[in-house]
Amino acid sequence: MHADEIRQKVMGYTQGTALLNIAYIGIVNRLFEKLAKTGPLTASDLAQQAGVDKGYVVRWCDTGYAFDLLDETDDGLFSLTEAGHMFLPDVPGTLMPFAVGAVLGTHMAERAAGLMPGGERPGEKVLGERGTVLPWFGPMLEKMFGPFLDNEIIPNVPVYQEVDARGGLAVDLGCGNGWYLRTLARRLPQLRAIGLDGFGENIRQANAMAEAEAMAGRVSFREGDIYNFSIDEKADLIAMNRALHHVWDQKEKVFSILAKHLKDDGVVIIWEPNWPVMRSRLREPDKRMMAFQNLSEHVQGNHFLRPEEIADQFRAVGLEPEVYLFGNDRESVVVGRKA
Image 1 (spheres, rainbow, N blue to C red):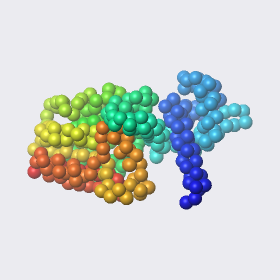
Image 2 (image 1 turned 180 degrees about the vertical axis):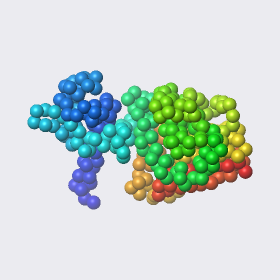
Image 3 (image 1 turned 120 degrees about the vertical axis):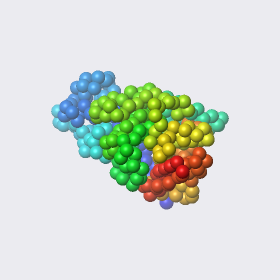
Image 4 (image 1 turned 180 degrees about the horizontal axis):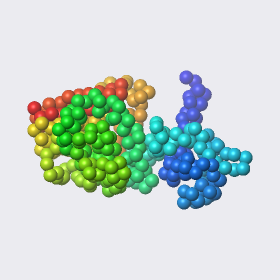
């Protein structure tokens, strides 16, 4: 590829990044939602409807129009284009996760650039350094991975049905906004569930959505620490959904805790990105973002894992592992059963 071709390609990437940034502003300030609900509005009326500053909204409408997220009528009314409609958080196949992920990724890139000279790894607190991102982190994961859990993982990992059949208790450690347990509860009507997370904002969202979905009687969420939590009975299922790599530096302690809180016929289900053995696989289009995400994880003091590493830790605490791979080997689900 010649230099001019590379330049044109990168310029295209730059415009794509800008589009996602513009969409992020509209998502966080509910501008897309207001336009979808009320129909075409002037920039001034949109600002009033959303309860935000008119000057910002005027400029946002200019950029939204420039990037084909908005259309404008002859009398100055703005409406959503088909592309703009796709950034509504609740439409099927929403593009919201890509906008939130792009802004979070830029934040992580800036932090990595500044931390690299000294090697500091500040940990999980970096997720809370951008006030507009954290409330959208859980919804981003839910829209990105919820359908995959519902359509691919639950039907193809038999232990979910086994636990549901006996009305068992599922505990999700690092539950975020509760999307994993709420997805299970919709599919497994006999299941009871408790979610634990260290971020109060996540727990607030999780309980509110469980109540809105009429799940509050059998699904609950509370603030908790994986290293120091208590439940009234041992669990039939303990889940760690894309969370184990956050505590891998304490893996011996973590797996001992998992085994301790498990019933004799219980299972642990670990869902993690599957870090490839061969670096060459990172050039596959559906795995490129994994490499960047792993750099972001390094800022937080973490790194992605291979299923063999997880299986070895299960064996170390007397659990027999079963490994399932999904999504062209991008995702691994490792089940540990008491031997």
